[in-house]
Image 1 (cartoon, one colour):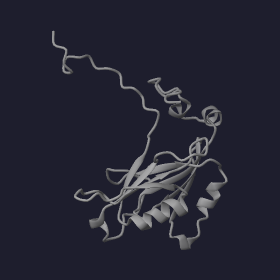
Image 2: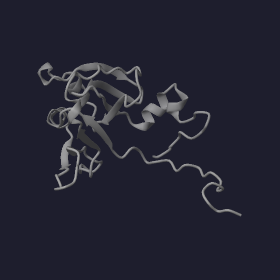
Image 3: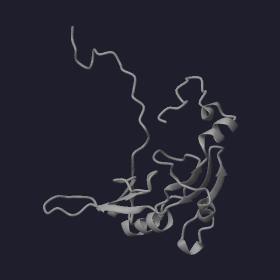
Image 4: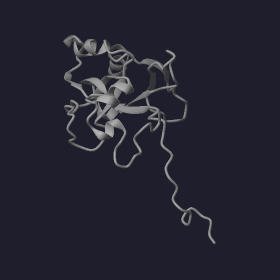
Length: 184
């Protein structure tokens, strides 16, 4: 009897604890750095350094704060794509128009920061796109300099949104039964 991977019974996938980090390709690393540090509040924790004789991307790594108030190795990385410096980015829309990233959600530690995000001064050049109460989050949507959609959100305590949601997939009682407590 063969024991290779082709004859092994399929195993159930192990659920991840979450998404560890995200890498965004950007047109201009300096412009994006200012947005993600000065507007969103990430901290730059590392940068790829050139190595003689080796091609490396122009790339920086950023961290939010964990539950203890410490930075991580990185939550976000920005990689400059030099040949894309020409032309304006596409306008972001919550309605999918093409494949790829629609938006990322950046969770805030307190809800009061949402009002600040919604009232970003126009001179910062951050387009305010929409404000939404999703039931489990209160969210403000903005776009970064490359047109990536950014959902700045405050996540309500689980007891609040689970008890008040009318959507089975948010209460954790969807028909497949895999939602409740997954990864928590």
